[in-house]
Image (cartoon, rainbow, N blue to C red; front, side, top):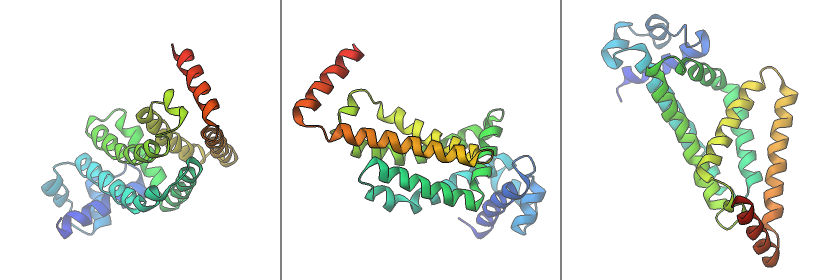
Length: 208
C-alpha cells in the first residue's frame, strides 16, 4: 500500500474518533491525514469506501495482534480473560466508539454494511476457531451450534463495550455472568465417562 493511501486510512480512523462517522468527511479526513482532500476520491472513490477500508485494516491488525493469545487459550475462562484484556485495550484506544458508530451507520448505509460485517467476521472466525478446539470433546457440542455461539460471544462483547459507557458496574456483572457459564462448562467436561454418556443421552432426548 502506498504511503498516501495508508495516511488516508490513518486519517479516516482519526476523523471517526474525533468527529464520529457523521463528521468523517473528505475534509476532516484529509486534514487528519495531512493531504489534499481530492486524494480521498482519487484513491478510494468515496468517503464510505475509505471508511470501510479503514475499518477492515484496523480489525485485521487487532486480530493479528491477538492471534498468539487466542492460540494459547486452554479453557473458556482463559478465552474470556483474553476478551476482557481486548475489551480494555479497545476502550482505551477509542475503538469502541468507532465500532459503535460504524454499526449504527451500517443500519442505513449499504456501503458501510458489507465492510463492517466483513471486519466483524474476522473476530467471529478467531473465536470460532478457539471454541471448536476447546469444545471438541465436550458434551456441550450436543446442543451448541459453535458458529452461532461464536457470533453470540462476539456480539456480547460488542454489546458489553457499548453498555459500559452507561453502566460500568452492570458491564462488570455481565462479564462475571459469562465467567460463571464458563465454569459450568468446565464442570460438565470434568464428569466421569458414565455421567458424560448419561448427560449426552438426556441432551439428545431433550432435543428430540
